[in-house]
Length: 325
Image (cartoon, rainbow, N blue to C red; front, side):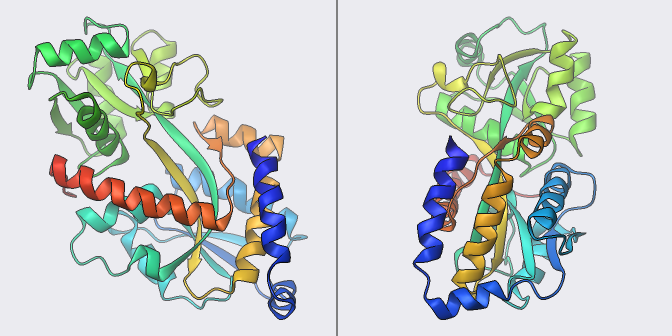
């Protein structure tokens, strides 16, 4: 339903573009399209971008759509390169909440301004986090865990994949909303964090579904809730944290952005193609396998999301004192 609604919204937007600009869009693409993933191969950004790129290539009649990994400085290196690229629709960036809405506040002297230097093209997917505890923790619901943390302030340790990581930001937002004080233990990646959580050396984490759900299924961990406001197809059977903490939502989001001066007609055409592919059951299932839900939007709706998230994280990161490693 959501994808159909987004397509219906995108169609009149494309029709409203002047005829000359629409002619420009019809000549696109004239060379291979590059989707820059500003992270190394194999991570969640890469695993989500590649199936979409393959589907987009099919939608464009086999025209090459290539994923390029340009990692460094938490995504800022690749993002800066895309911001300086020709604004012709042939260079796009896989934009992640961290790169576009968190990094401006945790990296000093970031070499781009998100709202000035990028044109939002299409939101692709959202990924809820899962609040998971070791079974030794005496809580079996989100409400019980909040009560426990309030009774034992500053004693329970939570792990993350590193300072400024998605798992750090998600738990910091949860603590901020719940009014609880936990001790942050940053790790160098999800692997060592998960090992300590499974062993009970760490008591709680708020991590992506692919990280913690295998342990939940094997009854080595307990899932208390997930961070989307409504039930998620990617995490069936786990209730939203918002049932115990009304109004709480914190999801990772992923989408495509282009250099700022990219013609609106080309942006509209890419948006229409992406939203069409997000209706494809095969692609939807690939996203679910990575813990993600398809989330098509118009370019304007995606821009509004980025702007609101920038304001949200500005306050959260200041209050929590979050800094990158």
